[in-house]
Amino acid sequence: MKLNALAAFGISGRHRVVIEDDEDPAFLEWLDRLSLDLKAEWNDVIDINSRLEANHPSLTQINVINGAKSDWSQKIPNLTIDEALNVCSRSFRILVENSRYDRAFLINIARNDQKDALKFLEENGFIEFQNGGGINEILEWIEDNIKSKKYWGRQYWVMFDGDARYPKEPSKVANELRSLLISLGVPNHRLERRSIENYIPTETLRHWTIKGARGNRRARENILRYYTKGLTEEQRYYYNLKKGFVGDTPDASKAKELYKDLDPVALNHLRKGFGSRISAYFREELINETYVIKDDIDAEIWPAIDNLLALVR
Image (cartoon, rainbow, N blue to C red; front, side):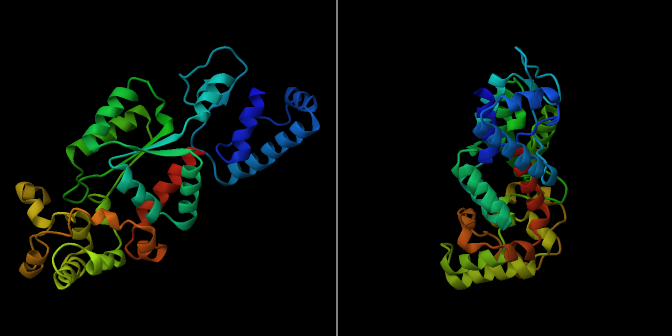
């Protein structure tokens, strides 16, 4: 019955269940002893999951052993059937700084097929977005729960802001978190741009000029105009969308000479940014694949989501 429970994961789409050697005499003998219904079910599991795994391999693996004790010391853990069922029954956790906005970011920036997969997994309880409470809190949580081996790191995927103010210079804490995750073997993605707000498509921001709460419509249109025309692509990647240049005043030196040649008129219009609620524009009806591709967001984010989905399988 426990092996049949394992097979159910392969049928439901929750996990890949692949037989190491489906021509092994011992396995074939066991298969022949099953009822016709169970034998048909296992043949379906073997056929479907083998084809899926060949085309889209899983990045998370465990070996189910016929033994009394699990061995977690191997790169691919060898687990008893009881422990394997326990592990496979848990939701895969996506640990983010803010589960509301980061979830909306991932799902709505995703390619259409990725979006469908993420929604299916979430609706069926296979994945869960876990609120980290900010990058410093995530760092502490990883220390307390993954480093201490309270939880298995391969059942987590961590996404966090790079908080970079200048190209290829993530913040100190972002570097610390990245190094810790790598050392513990926890899959992760550190955003290359400053924060999730720097991935809001330009076409999506046009909706903000119509319905945004900051200033009047003409003022909002000027902010967008100078954001798109007054800043270079590189400058937009590290601009403080929420608070503008005023918000960075205490640590303006971190941007080095990134904005040294900025037109004074553009600087004036971009002083206060788009407002603290700009992340709310990660909405399905305001974003599509064309917008994402146009702003070159797909090049970074879509492969990261492909990696995430491969880990969940």
